[in-house]
Image (cartoon, rainbow, N blue to C red):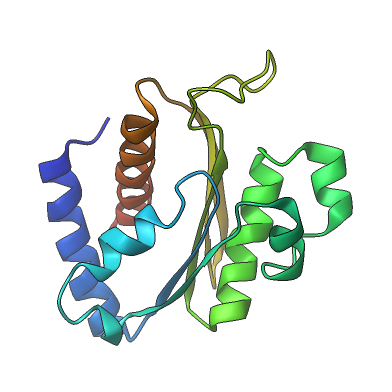
Amino acid sequence: MPTPQTTEEQLQRLIAHWLEQHESVSTCESCTGGYIASQLTSHAGSSHWFQGALVTYQIELKERLAHVQAATIEQYGVVSREVAEAMASGARQACRSTIGIATTGVAGPAGGTAETPVGTVCIAIATPQGIYSERLQLTGSRQEIIRQTYCEIINRLYHLELE
């Protein structure tokens, strides 16, 4: 698990890279409720690389705003890599950004099932080169799961973009 200090260092390098490469970022968040967008835009000058955010907590909004197909949700479930991938692509499309980030999951403390327990989070990153996605199983309080998801996203972005 990346530490907050490591996450901040990675984000600073990512920001420099995005500025140098004229890349832009957008998010489509469900279980993180805009936390990732808030953390990204807390950096001065983020308007040079951050395009916008969709908070699609309800299934209807995932379909309408992020263009996630109802069939994808029905086939794989709302907490799935496939839905996260569609959300990341939808963020890129809706916000016209180079990179789209998405999260969907169960932050708790309620809402989990045997197949998708609390702490299950699917993340996706869509770039012009393709889509990366992963299913995470995190632990802790609701806020800890949200913060861990943010740290994991930045860590994956760092490795995808800079390594």
